[in-house]
Image 1 (spheres, helix red, strand yellow):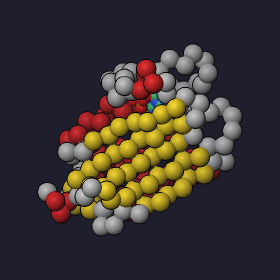
Image 2 (tube, helix red, strand yellow):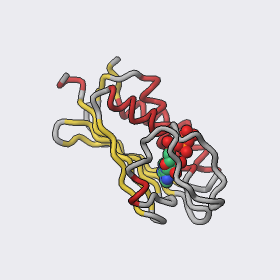
Image 3 (cartoon, rainbow, N blue to C red):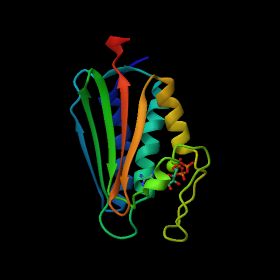
Length: 156
Ligand code: ATP
Ligand code: MG
């Protein structure tokens, strides 16, 4: 289905605001991509954005403000989406494993969060199924940014 990515992302963000407010956090959206029409499965694409935002809240620092930022832009004829947090970050050696099924970073009892390590494996599968790519950039104790690149519908 042809979907306006900005509209879809806005929808997910709105369902997320309450959760962010609960932690006195902020969520900035700069959805600047023009005509961001992508051909995606609406439900799966919604889940992808939801999963990334969910992680961003889940892996926040135990203290300090929670700051999330979501951006969209067009570059090299493709839609780019970034989801950025100021959370605990991921060590370089672990970064390449986060998209593996069942992989979770060992953090001891630093933060009491549970999961199966499946969220990002699902996210990656959905994005690659849509001829897109996803990558993560992170710095320990600073934050993490996920960048999704997707072909625009008009080019397919
Ligand atoms: P699930 O999503 O299945 O409930 P999960 O969140 O542990 O469980 P993934 O979403 O696949 O699994 O993430 C894998 C691991 O990558 C996480 O356990 C966490 O260690 C790390 N991670 C993912 N997102 C972030 C983030 N935004 N900041 C810091 N670490 C992250
Ligand atoms: Mg997760």
